[in-house]
Image 1: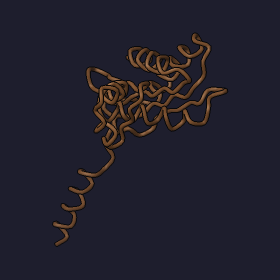
Image 2: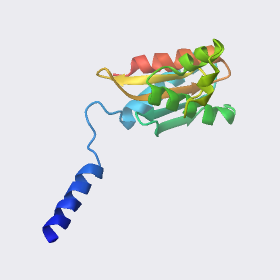
Image 3: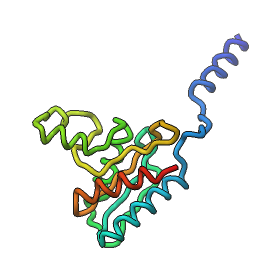
Image 4: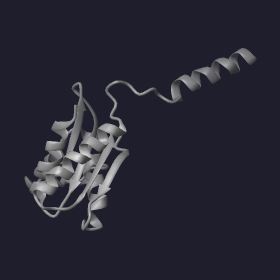
Length: 152
C-alpha cells in the first residue's frame, strides 16, 4: 500500500510540479526590454499610454502606465497582449476580421478586437505578447510590432 501511495505521490508531483524554465521562455529582463522599446517609440511620438507584457499563457509579466495615460489603457493593454499570446497573432487581425463583418470574433474567449497586441517569439516559438494602448490606434500597432521585433 505504501509503495502505491509513494508512486502516486511521485507521479502527481511529476505531472503537476513546477516546471523549469526552458531556454525559449520569456523572462522578466526580456519583458522589461520590450517595455523599454515601447517607451522609446511613444516618446518619439510625444505620446503616452500603457504597455503590458504577458507570458505564453497570457499571464502578466511586466506592466507600465506612463505619466498622463488614461485609466482605461490599463485593461486595454493587458487585453491586447493576452489576445496575441493566446491566439499567436497580432490583435489587429481580430479587429480587421470584425471590420470585415465577422461579428463572431466578439464571441472568441479572451480575445479583444483592437489593434496594439503583438506576439513575442524566441527561436520561432511564441513565448508571450506585448499590448500597447495609447490615444492613437496606429501608434499602438507600430509600438507593439517594433517592440516584438526587438526581442532577441
